[in-house]
Length: 426
Image 1 (cartoon, helix red, strand yellow):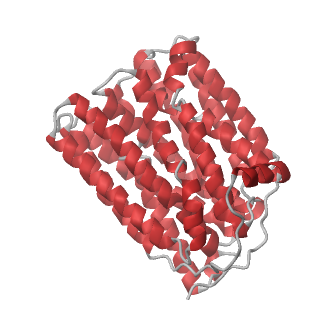
Image 2 (cartoon, rainbow, N blue to C red):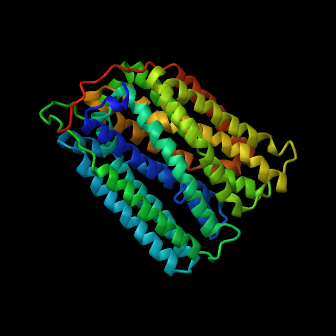
């Protein structure tokens, strides 16, 4: 089924979901990127690798952890969208506070604490919004179209991220006319107002009411154990997601490693963002189109292989004697493979999750899974400690192995692609 054949309200929901994702993906991969913006900002006020390694996984973990506590709220609500809207407002307030502090304060400790607090608060608000978002998408987008929606979100987001990357270069690059931290304060202001537009777009989706009289099983440890024991397909998906999250735990340290070990200039972070964002859209839309025919399992597995290859390139850099200017060019294919991974996985991973969970208990399955992943990601926040214990090379070898294991788990999934009884919004 092509999205052009949708009921007009469904087509409207399709494109509002795409616009929301395009804006959010564009900002998170450029002006609000945790690896090459927030981590680099923190690098100006601390050189502690443990603290620097916290930022990316902390943002992801705080998105995941609250979701199990939101399950009941979503199940009791006729519509999940109002919950999303409340959380979106809190995220915007977080951007306003971060911008104000960065523009007005020059104390390095305050700046560091503020960016960490922002990551925690904004990430938690995003987590509260996350499950309602999943529920709304599950209600208004048919199974075979979900990969296409996320593909378009990723493709348009990648294109917009090119402009966002230019903004990063404009404010923080070698030729910037603004000094630190004013340059980052202006960048954060731009990021906050841009994300507000994405929140607004999704708030316009027409969500059908849910029958709140349905009896849902009460969330408990025993229920989770039963699901784990009886649903082997979901169990494989959980293992795949766990390997995926752990395999990316060193992503925030890639630029730190490149700077401290290979001699790459931090000012080039914006250029690597641009490279990644130039490549991602093509793979994103290709993955979305492919998912309509074959599902989401194949693109996600291929994305894990691309991630494994990016870690392999970092692994062999030192043995090959790559440093300085050569290393600055060498990082281009590294971030290129990361772009392929993001284009393939982030376009299809959410759709894959929706297609391996029962629609009536989607909130229960996805909320519990995402909270578990939050705990996993918190462990991943120890990547700085692991790097100190076994070195960057050991950390990258671990990430390479986990990427391969994740590809194996995703490949073996059984995906449900039959049409749900989709409700047509009024």
